[in-house]
Length: 572
Image 1 (cartoon, rainbow, N blue to C red):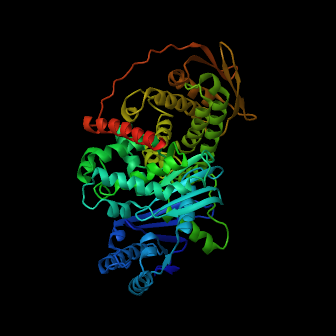
Image 2: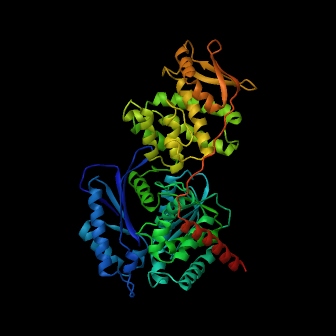
């Protein structure tokens, strides 16, 4: 089951996932607190599902590809001294000669392969999902679309309520239903009928609306998310983790693919990666039909799945205890990065404490978005930005706020979406120097509501940093007096002199006024900041260029209409 590579390093695990479409490698280590750090990864497309012959055996070419690829990945893992755990899924399960193949791979590479069934695959996938998203305390529907099968699980934390594996995969369905490279309308119709035949019996197993969130992993889900972000949101998606994908838009994209039919046209018009263009239509059809049968309106995409689940499960087994339990994923990840980037923990803690206290006491009157659910999200973004605002000093003291932006925006902050990471990075960067300016520099891609959130949160962080300018914890907390002339009064540590802090607040006055929408005056005698009157600012509307081709937009609109028509026909 486990193979120790030749190096002497410890606490490092390499997971090899042998799928029907690709073979993947992830190398990671885990500390005692349960934080998972991905050290290396590799993906090689082998399409083993296409090498299952009519007699049920894996062909010689398929065996050669699998052996060669696993040997390559074992060499990569050996550089880290990793304990290797390899798991095989649908294609190996279906191959009659799988035992012969696994023995052959073990003899040639030293890697012993576990053949896991669909239920165990679903459990491990969900374990990986829990490590990438803050879903530990909610009931979720999880889905993983593979090359040969799709796993579906309903669970809350460790408690699994429903789990199944159906033989519906992007590779196998493409091979079964599309005899030529270009699909025909009748083949597409039969594809949907076949998927429905397999999924409909499962509809009664999971009560619709019985889960709070629907989570999707796999290459298919991530490819559709990347496509959706580019075509619908006009943004390049670098990290799919946490991305929200509305099912109505999946339906529209599927309709566009069904009109294009040709994989090359799908690649050119919709921007699908060449390695997945020929199987994405079948994968999207599975996603759409699963959504319909289980009543999903929106999927949350995760970049973690089977491999990460195997890694966490391996650490648990080797440690003989329950290490690696999914807890506060966001907080643990932020603290781990702060340690990696050698952030001054005392300063970060003091600034974060003040920032959150200021936020809690002024958000209801000054927050630009008057929706309390939004405040909770922004409070967490502010907390992380406060912890990591000095991370850039790890690179250089000079212009460290800009380095902080780069590190946060490109760092592995688990549990946050790419957009959330970007907002955190912007808030951290603007805690000093120039205040945020709409549609300029790194803020150029933000819409007005997002910009106002950044401006508000950066203003709070700027104030919190100013209130700890001497780095001695001089200001213990604040009290707020509301009314037409609000006042933020500072509570001092016993015997402390707040002069340095008050002077810094005065220097930041213009920036704070823009962020909070008030004219302020620093009152040295009362040790406070008093509001004088509301600022009135005119907001400019900015026209944005449309970067999507007219053809893609027309196909998406048409696809949405065709899919609605198909749904209406099914209901009849």
